[in-house]
Image 1 (spheres, one colour):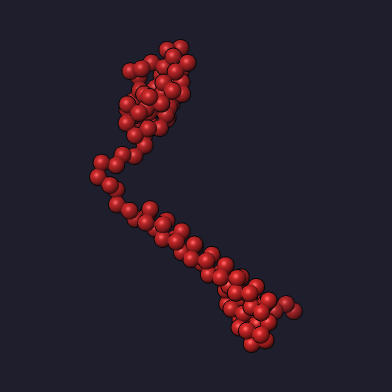
Image 2: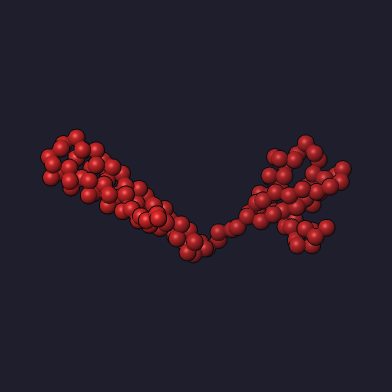
Length: 120
């Protein structure tokens, strides 16, 4: 029959080993377990910092005047259409010229995509 074995967290394990190395006065093991314990503490600190940063991003209020990227659709002279993501129409037209300029897109045809266009 297999026992359910719940090991200690790594940080606690290295702390216990460090304490026993101090009691044994084994300097090599002390240095080793101290560095491993320090690494585990730093890992926990980094994980906590990442969680805090993610929470700040999720709960951060929208700044006044901050624009979200929208999908802009445009057509080509030869027929067909494509899209780019930009914050403004001016930015979308600039991207359209940079990415698809050699395919002759129609300059005035750039507009925000609607749901109807996706159902085609």
